[in-house]
Amino acid sequence: MTRDFLRDDDLSPAEQAAVLDLADVMKTDRFGYRPLAGPQTVAVLFDKPSTRTRVSFAVGIAELGGQPLVIDAQSSQLGRGEPIADTARVLERQVAAIAWRTFDQNRIEAMAAAATVPVLNALTDAFHPCQVLADLQTIRAAHGRLAGLTLTFLGDGSSNMAHSYLLGGATAGLSVRIAAPPAYRPDPDVLADAEAIAGATGGSVAVFADPKAACTDADVLATDVWTSMGQEGQEGTRIAALTPYRLDEDKLALGRGGCIVLHCLPAHRGEEITAGVIDGPASRVWDQAENRLHAQKALLTWLLGGTR
Image (cartoon, rainbow, N blue to C red; front, side, top):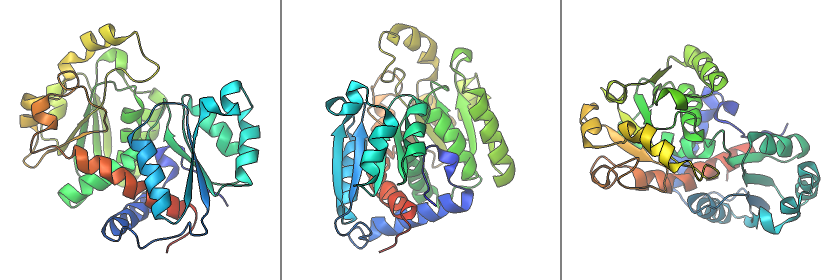
């Protein structure tokens, strides 16, 4: 049966741990795994601009022995309105898997429903699960574990990163805190799903209006840009609402000893995070960016049922 990865809770706690274990092994033995040798081709589609996603998927597929087929959707028939299911049926006969960076979650769900090969969410407006896998790998490397740690996300609690931290963090047994103003709270359905997962893993999820309370005794502080792609024109409103949630030195000082800082990039220094924090000793941002490569290689390998 084909497995897809459309949102973070598509992996069970045991499956998530297995992918992270494989990612750690692949990081130490970077060229030792060739499940795509042939080479098999993986299609990587982009409806949105990208740096880290584009680079990490293209490099990772090549390192697994495969051929990355990178497609800017606006230059394909998708960009001219071809039904998603028709594109899926064409691709599935020629590629081993499909990764897609797109807008509405319904689009990637439609691709997965039509395709007979694994479909991976390379970012949608609702979730960013490949990023959170890399973040979990980064946290585990810094702290030696995941279960029982506290992760606080500061900023837009309705964003794809906040949603993926809730689901992926709860799956890993983290205590996930979302610090956001009332107008930017997480989707209630996602929050309910994360609460159910946390009840089984020993984690917890909570939403805070007070950013300082959310940061107190945290092991990880994370943030993201305040205005994402597709939200252009909202900058003024968002900056006014979210400025109290800036990840700065005072909030970092509230965390536990050894607290680390994450940002999925690109960053706007002076807006959602200060330069002193992102470029300071607590930052693991560059490890986080590198781990996109290793986590996605492990995920692709696992979804395709391969090892070496």
